[in-house]
Length: 124
Image 1 (cartoon, helix red, strand yellow):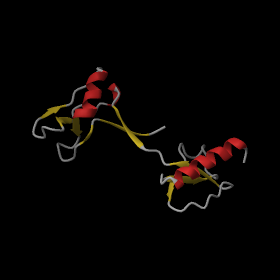
Image 2 (image 1 turned 90 degrees about the vertical axis):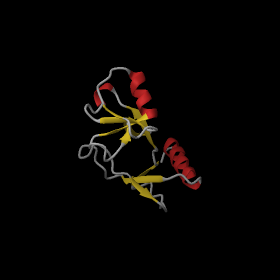
Image 3 (image 1 turned 60 degrees about the horizontal axis):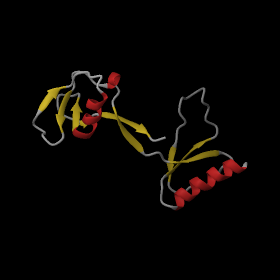
């Protein structure tokens, strides 16, 4: 391992010592076969840096929809007024979509299940 790889290994190992979740995937992963490596959670790492890559498990982050991601026709309601519903319509207004993330939730199955008005992404 070079100096930068060693620094990264120390950073991940220190995060594990500090109680953060760590993941690994084998170095046999081929980016031509799969767009993303198959990261696995590990509880007791063996620190096999010759055969595995390691990382601190990313924390998912909820971000507002883009205009193209708004599920048109879904129901939307205020989180605090559960009985008040309306039909979700497209908007190009980013401020509206930001407000939806904080104050509203949506349903695409007629109100059986309610989800946040946004997209869950892996933190970078």
